[in-house]
Every structure is written in structure tokens, then in C-alpha cells.
Length: 206
Length: 206
Image (cartoon, rainbow over all chains, first blue to last red):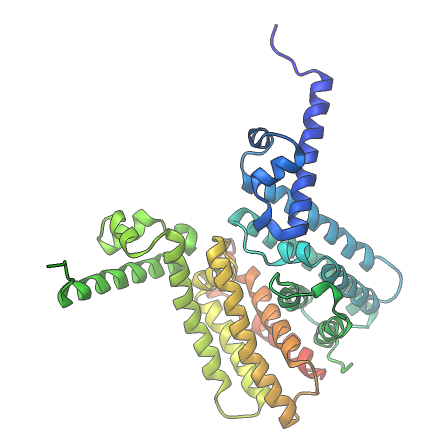
């Protein structure tokens, strides 16, 4: 009789996998991908380092999966903010404000997701997720053009400008080298970013 | 008597080093960092692969140096465009237009410099160079505020928005997966990017 995984074994494996992911997530939120060493993750998850490699082909694969999970959460939040009531301009502004606010409240994780130099696998994911954000913005810009709150424009191009402007302008403030980020009053920063973005879209002085 | 390098040996070493860099540059311009394999570079430079590692500690170090050289050239071009005559808005627009135009005319190299997933060393350089671009733009925005062609704003913040907007909106069009990039008429694309950026800065519809 061939070896068969019992239901109980499958469950135990799934739980161990989840624990490894959660512990990696925790490490990244605390000190970026750089601090998420396999020995440290193994220690937190209370497994041998070899066990990690039974669940993930490589450190890069584990990181890519944690990156996906964490970024998808942010993408979902943006989608949610874009789907509330109000005109397209108001929804877009709310989404940008929320994205920036969340990033500045969890600066280490946000820096890791937006800019931390990691490895090519994570960089590939980063490019893919930037497209996901851009698609969400593009849809709302198109709605805004139809509604009349945005002038006619290349919505796809404007959406990538938005993604770039907000991500790049957060990279500096989020960078690990800046002390006391969490206690700073970030509103003027967020206001400046939003102002540039909304002016870029509308061509109207704010 | 201790071994001493003769002047001739030093020159030969410097020439070999330069040749390795030039051949790497050529590979990157043709197919990105991904295609710049050490064996290929060694073949082009007509040296043994071991020789490359006598000049550079690692592939990452060689790539970082090539990245620096290529990016510094672009930074210098932007600085040059910003230092011509005209008001700050005109100079800034000319610099952005030139940056985008150069990128679209050399799309493989531009993609490699702006977005290709490489390794953490190149990513560190990328972050540093983005700051270099932002500093140049910031200076011009400040001049524009003084001249009265830009409304008062946080020049530092606006400069990072500019860098992000232009880089991100070029990433898609430059991506290696897009066919026939070089033959496309890119003016509408560049116009859309410039419009967003200038509206973002001025709050005036274009």
C-alpha cells in the first residue's frame, strides 16, 4: 500500500506553514526583510530551519509569499476606499490618503513593501502589485472623466503617475534611517502628496 | 626587494578593468542585467571569468558600478537641461521631456536602470540615484517659487512626486515584454506624463 497523508498530517503541515508565514511577517514588520533571517524565523516558529525548507523552496519563495500577503492587504484597502460613496475625485483622494496614512503608521512594513532592496523575486512581485494599484486608480479616473470631475486625459498614464508619485514620496519618510518616524506629525506630508496628485489629475489649484 | 607593480602593469590592469565594464554595459544595454552573465562578459572582453573576479569582488559589485556609470550619465543630462536658460517651469519641463525621451530611445538600458529586478546592491544604488534626481528637481522648484512660476509648495515633497511619477509611468512602456517599443510614436505618452507633472506642480490646467 502506497504511503498516504492522513487528514491530521495535512492539517498539521498547513498549520506549520501558516506559523512560518506569520513569524516571517512579524520579523518583516519589525525590521524589514533584511532582519528576517531563516534562523530567527525558525526560532520564532519553534521549528528547525530544515523544516522551513520543506515548506518553501527557498528564502526568496517564502519572502515572495509574505510580500504578496502583506501587499494584497493594502491593495484591498485601497479598493475598499475607492468603492465608497462620493464622486470619483473624493473617493480617489480618500484612497490615497488612506494608503499614505497606513504606510506612515506602519513604516517598517511599508518601507519593506515599497522600497526595501530585497531580491529579484520580491522585485518582480513589487512590479506586479504596482500594476494592481494602477488598475484600481485607472478605473476610478475613468469614472471621474465620465462624471465630469476630472478633465479628459489618458487614464492609464495618469494612474501610473499617481502610483509613482505616492510611492516615491513615501520612500524617504519611511526609510529605516529616519528616527522617530512614528511620532512625527505626518499630516503636512500627506497633504503635500495629495495636493500634487490631485492637481496632476485635475489641473486645478488646491 | 618587495614586488612592485610597474607603471605598465598598472596601465594594463586599468585597461582590462575598463574593458570589462564596457562589455558589461553593452550586455545590459542589449538585454538587461539578466542577460549580463559573467561567462558572456568574459567572452566579449576576451578574458577568463577568473580575471573578472580579480577586478571586481562579485558580479553584484560589477553590476553596481555599471549601474552607477549609466545612471550618472542620465543625472548629468537632467542637470544640464535644468541649467539652460528660461524660467524654472520651462527648464523643468525640458528636463522631464529629455529624461523620458532618452529612456524611450534606449528602452532596454532605461528599463534596467529604472526597474529591472536585479539584486539588493543595485537596488541600493537605485534609491540613492532617485534622491539625486529629486535634489536637482527640488532646486529648480525652489527657483520657480521665487520666480513666481510655481505656487508656494513643499519643494522637497513635490520633487519626489515628480521622480516617482515619471519613473513609474515609464516602467510599463519600457518593460522588456512590450514589442516594438523603439518604433512607437511616443510623443502622446511623454505629453501625458509631462501634463500630469506640470499640473501637479502648478495647479494650472494644460
